[in-house]
Length: 605
Image 1: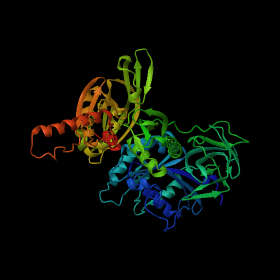
Image 2: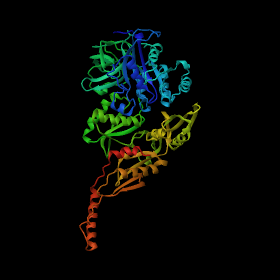
Image 3: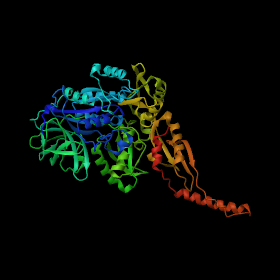
Image 4: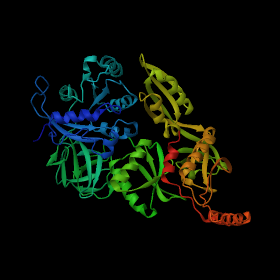
């Protein structure tokens, strides 16, 4: 069934975490009968086990629905194609959101009637407005007893400048009001604008690796039409392929003869190399190529760097292959090879945040069977040397000698925290402890406050988000963007085990916090490093100066057990013999640091 371009609608759902995006998508799939009752389950688009366990969306999912508007609505009874791209809500996955927005003409802005507008809602909204998307505001969870529909509607009206009657009300759980949303999508969101007769231009917005069929790329056709059997070329890489199969994305891949202008689909062309498919690339025809690539979305900027090393050193090449395949499905991961004294060969990876790091590590294990050791994450610093050079340092081991450093600059962020005014005090104290400077505050409603802070990125890397959630009883929401570099007084903190530096545990830290941090790490490692046959000295050092020390006591066998009675010298002789053995053992013994120790360093309170 071919549908006219004027009857295609591409839209995404943007919202804060847990405001009901995936549940609303479920109801839409039910209502349009894209799935029958047998296949239906909760959060059906969150197909990863991890997504279901954590109750968050990690990947944006695209799915096509067919809908006939009800009586009274525009184009009543005629079939329309609706392409939904579901997006994550967590700040760490904002890159997924930007890709979804780049391939849509409209967005549903979902706001929870019990919680009101949150920080992530605002930042995703600005992203959508920058791309000139048509915004349809939706108030969700109106069936909950604690809902405040009037108050939250006023907040949405203030934010968008729309009329209060434009705000649609629904309950994604019960399905109330969902049909009105589908009608509004048909009425308000414009049809795709491309020219079907122009040379083919299609934007790749995602891809996955299939071990049988190679790489499957998802795209949106901006101009022209793509057909099965076409000879296609990827614009940025310059590689040419044959489109063995093109089709649309339902719950499964559905092959079609052609994908018309303005629609969303997938292409399989037997690509085996992960490096040949770049998210944001343009697909065009070999014979009649388009003149220029589509100006896609911005390059991803990693916020956080950590080393990833295989547990078995001979699995280095396997880890590289796994990361390349993983990158297809998660374009926000960047990596480059590096080596470490303690851990051998591995990769320096860039992530968007701590949750992203945790998810990547977990997915590598589940999807590729790769068990990895992750080092302490850090941000990248600009180091100005006395010779006038500027170095980008992602890793403490890359720091030049202290005598060569003129000064160091670290990245700063502009952070927005939205919370109930009751938690104003604790939140301000938390931000001040993290070296934050208050830049502005403004009341959204009588009891909801927006605080703007400027603070170092390195301070929010560890536990800022967790602590913010606990002091505000889960109410505060948080969003940030990098706003530049500022000079800072940083030192390199080394951890020594029996005098040997454990380079995987070293970190760059502000001089004022170094003593306290060093002491905490030593105490934590004392609990976690298993006892050996010899004493283990754990020391924190800045340069040659030791600032903290703990000792893991040796395990001793009672060698005097067989001596009963007799002269004390007999016991002393046995103890002396044991002492000599321990001394010799210490010279040849090595200290194994368990993976739990690396993770515990991240979660220091």
